[in-house]
Length: 227
Image (tube, rainbow, N blue to C red; front, side, top):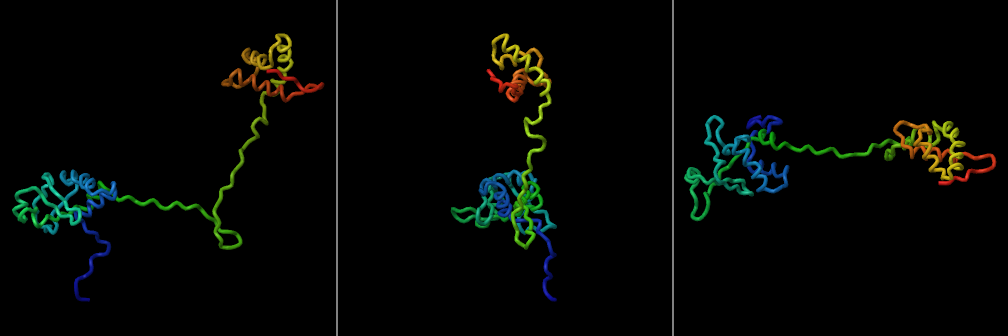
């Protein structure tokens, strides 16, 4: 075929317009043009992000862009006016107006993305599904709730035999000192008579002994527990 061959597949130009660069920084920020330009200016001034005049020949050394001067960027066209006598001489001003032809500036795409990388959108979260056995109907996947492992709380009492052996002594203290069952159990616990774990308190051991007392019955009937 005659004519100009198409560009190489997948080629992306190294340079983008200043307006595109500001728009990219604005999308990653708060969307404000002035704030994005203020954020981008130090990188242009320090040379961290290279810039050039649009259409500059690659084999010729183009004059540096005077980012250190006061400049104005048109939000709609992307044109730049610099407060520079050389620029004003090259772009004569109309009476009462800035230079008629603003400078066109391009920015290095790769260096811009190094400091303002593209944000990758998070994939949408979907609930797992499974097909129904009798057809292609899709039903929401529900996780089966598992019950608590191990015995029911309170079903296992490792010190029950020792506690039951203390019940006669507990009743003897109640009868002799005319005190409540709770006071008698606490006295036994503080004296180290009630077995328990090393980090358990006397109050918790006394409470456990009273629980055994409540669940124990005399042949003549139930205990009358006083607290």
